[in-house]
Image (cartoon, rainbow, N blue to C red; front, side, top):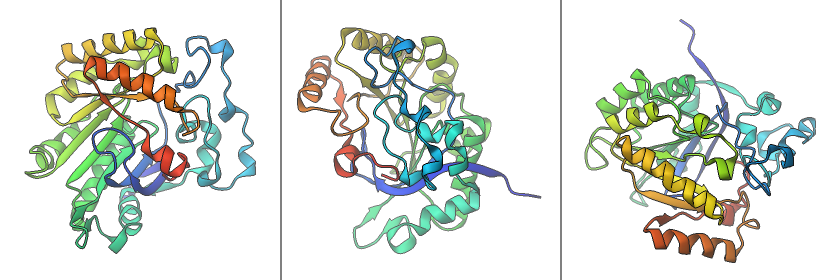
Length: 301
C-alpha cells in the first residue's frame, strides 16, 4: 500500500519565539494550506479590504527557486507562502517517514535528546493550518514514526488558529501518549491563536468555531491562547469578547498578548510598550516575537 504524502512548506530547527515556551529549542514542521488568509495584518485599516497592500500576490515567484529565498512580507500574513497557491510549487511533498527523518537529521547529534545540554528539543507543528484534516493525519503519522525510531517527542506543540475540530485519530494518539503532561508520558501543548477581525480582517464566523473549541477542551489540558493585537481599543474589545467565547466553551488556557508586526522594524519600542502596558493592566501574559529580533523572521527561523 502506497504511503500517504503531505505538502510541507518547511522543516527547520530554531528556538520557539512566542508564548510560554519562548527560547526552547524546537524542531519545526510547517504544513502547507490554510483555511484563513489574514490579509488584514499590518494594514492601515484591517477591516477595509479595498485598502490592502498585499505583496505576496505580486511578488515574482519565478525569481526564486527555494522557499528560503522569499522575503518577509510586511503586509498580510507573514507566512503566506505556506498556503498561497502561488508558492505551492516551491513546497515539497513527503511521506510521514521522510518528514520524521528530515526533522531528526537536522538536529545536533541527530537526536531530540541533547545529553551534554541535558535538554530535550521540542517538536512543533505549525502552518498554514496544521489542524486541517490532512495535516492532522500528517501529525499523527509523523509522531508515530518518530516513536518507532526511538525519537519519541515528549514535548509537542501544535500551533493552530483554533477553527478545526480535533480528529478521532489525533485524539486517540493524545489519549494514548500525551495525556499526563511532561512528568508523565509527554505533553501535547496546543497554542491557539484566534484571529481578530479588527487585526487580521477575518470575520468572526470564519475565525471562531465553538465546536472546535469544545473538542480541544475535552481532550487537551495544556496550552495557551495567543492573540496578535494592535493598540486600538477596538482590537482589545474584540479580544475580550473572543476570550469570553473560549471560556464559555471550556477552554481555560492562559492568555498571551503579542504586538502585530512581521519584522523587528515594525515592532517599535513605543508600540511594544503600549501593548505591554495594556496587557499588564488586564493581567495577561506578554509575548514578544523573539525570532524576529534574532533572525529577522526570515524563513526557516
